[in-house]
Image 1 (tube, helix red, strand yellow):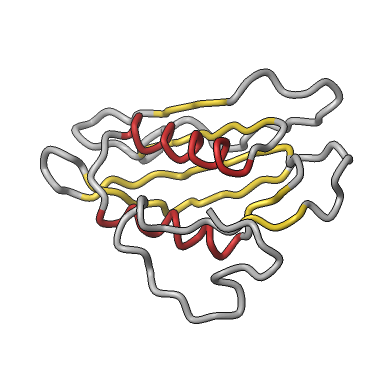
Image 2 (cartoon, rainbow, N blue to C red):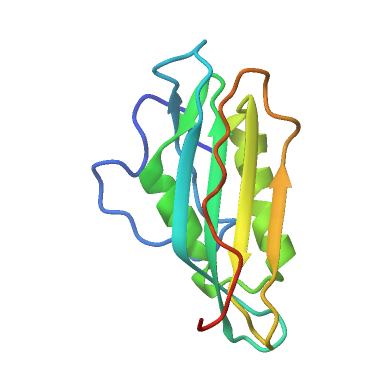
Length: 152
């Protein structure tokens, strides 16, 4: 975790981390500290590997959070998410692990993640995690990802 005013990745050439554990997420001061608002990141082409077969798994991730004192810098988040391309993990572990790491390091007021995984073996798996109930007064829109319907 890096929580300085000079993010490690922003404005720099940064290689894709070898693993999620090696990825450094940058956090910067919340420019609207004290205000209640929601931030959304969507990663519609997220990829990881099946821990049994090594085959690629694909998901549409949606991360919503209400910042506390810091916000996550988006380039470092992109590199962190990209580091899963060579990471083997079950859908549940990957989705919940991303949410918990962001929550533990950034310490937002609230965070949720939806992992909408595309089918392998004929079954789509959707995984959801949130830190707690949303704060009173926070507008939390639907994540906007339709359930899997196949080809028609």
